[in-house]
Length: 136
Image (cartoon, rainbow, N blue to C red; front, side, top):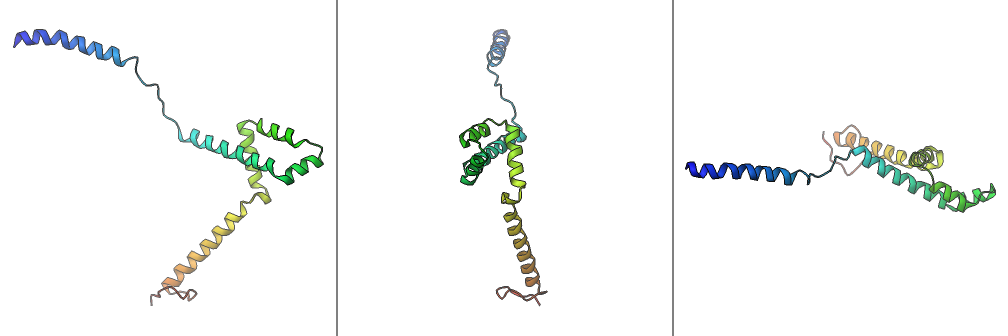
């Protein structure tokens, strides 16, 4: 038994050193990717798409031509915007009255009113919908 330990001990030290040396340089250089960076990248892409769609509209190109601006030059300048500028421009476009965000508010309000009326009808407080079972 002592003979086996005499052979195994140096061998185990050599193997441990070998595993340490092999695994050292092969460490992966991966890092955690934060949610904010992924969301920011997606936000920048959607902002750039919104700016491209805006610049592709005929009425925008006609308005630029009326102001004496070449639409191709305006498109090139829009593509050259930094990420922060593109996001800020997309946010401004959404906040304008013709931005189209009011449709979602109207649909949401209608859905909320419908759900409230449906719940009150099911509970028996109102009698609006004929397809609900009444609890009396």
